[in-house]
Length: 226
Image (tube, rainbow, N blue to C red):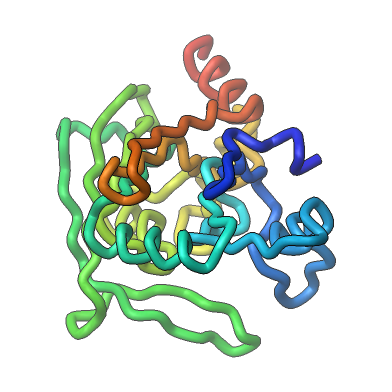
């Protein structure tokens, strides 16, 4: 299944179009993860995750085929030489074309081991830029570019801005999520659409795009038809 989702592969990189619902690492109650799948696909090699995606976020996942490349990518992420952008469907019509959100975030462990992020004055700096792509009466499709990669950053920033992501069971609006289920959204509407690596990182530039999954495209079609 995951082999069919390879977007790009060479001697340094592997880029996957991760499906929603598949965690990158094993956790409580999970029987399989991206790492497990990669171990099965590459039994003689070790593939390293260069960053993370939430379990229910789909899209571009960057992996390195060696420790050396992994360290180059990690340094590049910190230097802003790797850029990621996402598509998110959020509640309400977002009227501002481009909107920067820079709430500081702090990780918190809830009883039972669940991880969440909270807006805290003393938390780590986090910057997300939301750009309006489409607007309907109750929701907006946003392009989101992040300058930092904090836990659940886009989800918390969207919710704190008054525009929770559709299908977000942790930070969103449960009643509204039930309403949006009628449009076919049965999971978090957050997709890592694009990833770019500057040419200075690995000697050449890379750009990867993951198409919006069928279930999310179906939702947009139903919104257009409503």
